[in-house]
Length: 422
Image 1 (cartoon, rainbow, N blue to C red):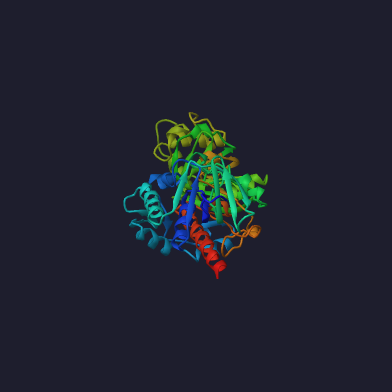
Image 2: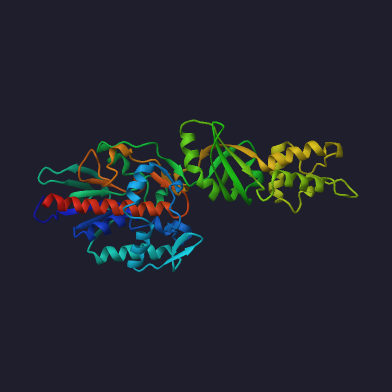
């Protein structure tokens, strides 16, 4: 290290949500901090969250909202929970606004979160380097620490926090390019697959109902065993199914597909009516007095979206313009009610990382100290955010994990330097 080079206390690689939180927390311990981001702007992924409004935490922080390593989640979340998150953001100028348990900035702009974090980094004197691509970390042989190198990059630091994300939303920065560097350090990953995403599906004709949105309940079966379910607005697409309820069960579906298991979704297309109520409604429609016999499209008019009716008919083997005979009514009604309340399709593939909000999987937890997020393999290197084997459902849970894990990594990296001085 030449005399001109700065020996940093802590270098943070990755300028997303967890990386910025880690850099802020480390700087608040009084340490010199440099934040390295390979994109031209910090927090690009934050700007897309919550449809641009940034749902940054949730009033209901239940364990059921998180997947992956529950022990790791609990160990870190208790160090920086929802209330501390709200207090932190209020302290840097973001007034929280709660709607149905979802917390947003009062401005309802994701840009407010990103700018507040950037301003706090500046306020604390954190050096930010954007457009820099690190491609190697090695132990330094002339001081106790590490060297981060890359094109036009040579950063010596006592401690390193890695917050580069995995593979979801590659355009925003999480493109997986740093994963080989982490593997070269000796770390291993559990399977990394897309989550909070839609799925390609078979067992019906997706294009028949493409574009239809409806309130429904989706239940996930893996090798015929019920695993999870969720209720809300479901969307049929040209490739399969999407919507928040599908996103909420996506972790289990994606992992099961990776493991080559049979993955099915059973959809209740009309949850507002029980099976008995739906049967009665269908009987009333089929047996309603009329001068002429009606076809399926006419029978379902006012009950279901026409494209959804066509999809159900195709699923049941009926022709939408066909007029069922009266003697067929009992069997037809039975078939239709079972199809509407239990529309069973096979999920064949998650959408690509480009369309996934997050990735699940991450660095194997046994290689990480759960209290500090320090590497068990390389002392002085810490990890946070999506790199760790914790992910949440929709609703601000993944950003909460970013804040909690970023805080823990920054705090303990700073504390370790203090302990080494004494």
